[in-house]
Image 1 (cartoon, rainbow, N blue to C red):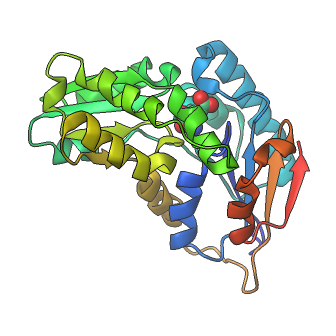
Image 2 (cartoon, protein in one colour):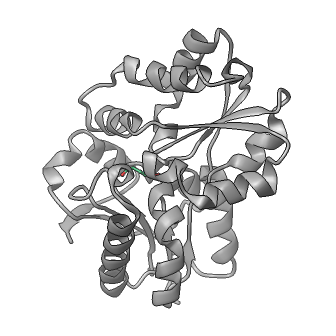
Length: 269
Ligand code: DGL
């Protein structure tokens, strides 16, 4: 394993930044290829078959091209649907994104938690299993909040955030039976933590109090660190680049976030 061998991060769009950020905080010398599928965004509105086929094909091409030491599917929708397929098909070790239902259930006093994800994620049997395993004594209220994906992309690309969309998502949780009791909300889409300050404000407006939000970013970072333990990182500035399936012009001001982390180039897949 060469020190320069990168870790591959993959998402439909910019949501993977909420996973990349804690990973770089823990492993600042990590060489990275961040790949996103702007041409396929949003995954949350696609069928399981479409997401599964698309993600498996793209990851196959990316692994072939990048030859990463490890690949991170920094997308709940892609992970809950396709992680099993890609692990079976490819030799590279894969880390997926698991909705943070366990820590939210551990923290909830009212035993009522909310789960916000994409439409595709909230209907996955994988979520039922996580609830059965870790939140069996909780009321778990779900809502497919795909509009938040667009809001997060808009915020990072510099085209603005519609606050109404955030409040609508939280209202849809509160309106369910016992919804007012929710004291912990799982952000089960990697795009949503990118809206954290706006969600804090929207939660105060909708619930009339502070809300606790949970996401998987820090846990995934620890998992990557564990899997890379004992491996070398470069001594000098690590190589970091973006690969985009689709129109790189859609990055807008998001490029500045990548440049600040030492990303030097953007290539097309
Ligand atoms: N970031 C992705 C996730 O975590 C979804 C965004 C999309 O709908 O493409 O689920």
